[in-house]
Image (cartoon, rainbow, N blue to C red; front, side, top):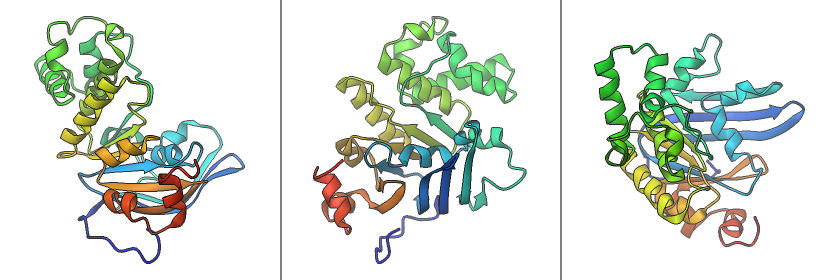
Length: 261
């Protein structure tokens, strides 16, 4: 949070970043990022391309670990526990912190098997239990009515918007606490984008959602809090309405009003 800013207390933070620096090899991508993400709210990360928002998002479930030569300094806390401490079970972490990517990436399997994949990996073998998980996940992802009669059909036959909602259902199937979304609607048409935004609004009741978006109108529509990143630094963070109407940092105002970026 920028010095001098004060906001209404949104409750216990679900995610806290403390003085986070991050490197890809010798190149530093994040600089001293500190912020607290409240539970069961939607937090949007905005900023120009290459500003570090997707890098920051991926630090939260250690997805950057799969890239050779990366390094993080500082702490990422979820419910007060440092997810980078020695001995952290990264598989369990990614169960708690699900992710939906920019491009829908269904597996070349049936609709049913796409959603059942995660629960199977985590040990669910009972067929009746899997059927219940798949149905409930598809209902929560607002897809059930469209696919309930063709669960054995290939997921690759779904439209782009349906595939993205299927990927959300797949993330929900392992019962996460946090959902990360990296530009989940950027490749979709306006109607499909609206469906995703409606879905985010419904999911905020039960999940902490952090979304990266280039679309500032989308950030204003879907989020409770917004963080503005620039050149790897967190410039300003606060309630979305406040940040968009009365930002306290001129650089934020310049970006929101289109003077740069």
